[in-house]
Image (cartoon, rainbow, N blue to C red):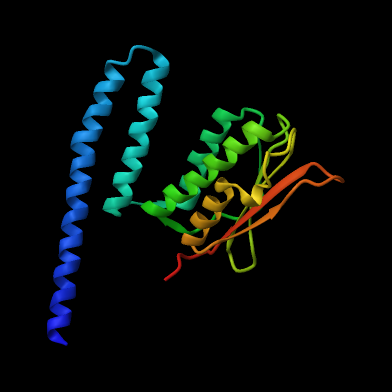
Length: 203
């Protein structure tokens, strides 16, 4: 039994050291090259793309380090601002008291990727100006995020079979949450997705 425990401890140490090595390499090598690309970019668009990639790298490093926590309210305010930059006519509705959940680095990135996927989908398929994002809470203080909009056109495949929705469900599940989807039909053109996150992280 002691031999097994010692072996497990050594393996954990090895994995931790490997994670730190990868983090250093990403920060020093890839990060440095991206900074060079930003400063030497031939156009403003190329510089913006490199800047976006650098930001994604920083988020990945934060997840690997797993040393940063962010209050949900703070994270959500930042994400709402980012959504507004992409979709200026977006409408936000708040129907709950302040959420007290604190997000780990990984959870913050998951939430951000979910929002980015839904924003991109709305930009592509929604009738401009119809996207409404509602935040509310349940009696047990779970966080409920609802995205709804009228569809200007239907996706080429059913949304349930699209990779984007699969990724959203996987990211929400990793946070202990659930996803419900309402698809447009012949009778109505509204698309809606409801994401429920527990008030506390899963143990």
